[in-house]
Amino acid sequence: MSEGSSVLFHRIPGLLTALVVVAAGLFTACGDDNAAPAASTSATTSARTTTSSNGASTSTAELVKLLRPSVVHIKSETATLDDFGRLVPSAGVGTGFIIDDKGDIVTNNHVVSTDSGDAAQDITVTLDEGSEHKAKIAGRDPPTDVAVLQIDGGNLKPATLGDSSKLEVGDDVIAIGNALDLPGGPTVTKGVVSALDRLIQEQNVTIPNAIQTDAAINPGNSGGPLVNLNGEVVGITTAVIRGSAENAEGIGLAISMETAQPIVKELIDKGRVQRGFLGVTIQEITPSLAQQFNLSVDHGVGIRSVQPGGPADKAGLRQGDIIVKLGDKDIQTSGDLFAALTEHRAGDVVEVVYFHGGDQQSTQVTLG
Image 1 (cartoon, rainbow, N blue to C red):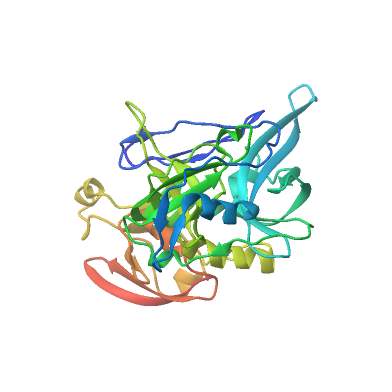
Image 2 (spheres, rainbow, N blue to C red):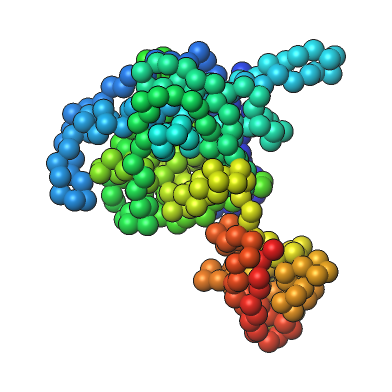
């Protein structure tokens, strides 16, 4: 596997696999989300006492009791035709959490998608008290692996959403999810924020500002909440890293709520995310490429072609220009550019810093 690559597991009959990230060439993918009958919801936790950022002393068990009614079990099923015209069912499981009393539930897109990227045909949500509800998809955003489901149900308990921008490395966090879909209900794990601002990249998925944690995250946890000690959801558990030579222990990743919340709102309001685009095709600039073609910079993203009449064209960007900054984000790689665009919407005006020949220039681009 090439350095810096990553692997997104796919659904196969009877399995829903988790998003797995490979970082700096050190890791390879490992793990599956096994589809099994929906389990009743219960949890075994320690009664360790923790102190939240506001100074209140609360046991982990007490926090879990408060959070469990907001956490749901998700089972998705799809039937496809094989080469002989026979229907072949496939199923997967994951986790989600309720965010309002209208029945909106946040989860990962890959939890409710087929191997080909289509929406799952049949989705069942099981609440903490055991009741099952058919769910419909309010919206999906594959580029950030976020999806919103909707159910009809009374007496729903929404989770409290927190401000992930206030997290610091070393803060305690709790992950709750249906790890391996084990019978007996969700699994609760506890750890710390190991790092911030990680970048998750896989195929067409680019997630900036991810939270790294050593709280154990396993297949089936996908879409579940990562919670601070105030009982607030600060992330959506999404990925686990595995080593190439041997398993890398204690490296899990979550989408920050800072990234997820505007996406969730747009999915609820519009059913999709209208993300901004530049209207260019690109080529990542590497030191070897820069040396070969005697380029003025050895990093950034080169423009291979410009869409006529598109945002970049209107702003004066041309084939051969090298983008090194978009908005407040430095652009070293194509992943950096995708991540920067993920944070913007159509109509946003952003400054693009680029090299034209040997000259550094800047322009204002109105994203399409």
